[in-house]
Amino acid sequence: MTNDRVNGIVREAMVAGLFYPEAGPELLWAVDSSIEAAEATSHAAAPAPAAAARCILSPHGGFSYSSLAQAKAWRELKGRSPSRIVVLGPWHGANEQGVFLPESNVFRTPLGDLRVDDEICDELESSGTVFVRNDIPHMEEHSIELQLPFMKRLFPEALLIPILVGGHDRRLPASLSRALDLTIEEYGDSMAVVASSNLSSSFNPDEAAARSDRIVAALERGDAEALANDEGREMGFGSAVLAAVVGLHCMRDWGFRLLKRIDSIKARGDEHERIVHYAAGAWYPKEG
Image 1 (cartoon, rainbow, N blue to C red):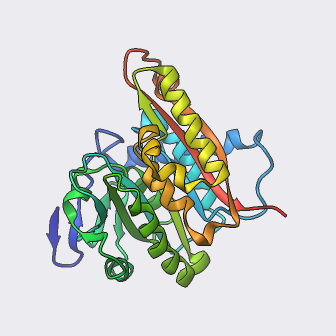
Image 2: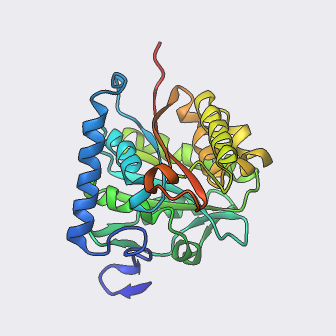
């Protein structure tokens, strides 16, 4: 974290060089290649929805594992051209419950800076006691940062609203949904929501697959309760973030569509590491 006289407080790219390329040109090539591959494989997919997505599910694995799934998700926002993007992520190392907004004014990426929408963050902070301004979770956590190269490449002028969910108090997703509903209602189609979440992980392949199946099923039927309760926590660490999205009142007439699913063994071929399941998905207006 740095304090810039022009930009204010800057949250530096903490996992550049670890989860994705640190050099700008190399990262640009990785993002563009993933988007091109996603578009090429979409030609044989199911017919495109009639309207652009308002919200997407995008994983946060290292680029070598999940960048194609990320690109699959992010390209679904291209028809909307949002001016503000809410990125929700879990705080994996959470030692306290809460919904954490940044103190930083800028999130830095190797592709350039993204400005935080401080006004909306102020509004959210004042909307309930679950919201806390604290940069420590944002410095420690990578789930939001992994989305930012795609955001900067596709929507370079959009303002960022980064929100981390810590702990698994089942009341947090509902509180977050209520606050976001008011914000989304105000900004309408100029705002998009990104749920940064993997599906599940385990050393047991069958267990990881079964948990992932249950999460996808809950998303498809719009079951926020199943994602928010204790069983949801066992299914996957990002389930609270997904519960907040599914629980949005403004999304009641939108349905989830799975775009791609992959696991770390298929991505890297290493059968001796912990298995992580990734998915790309998006919410579209329900037909009929």
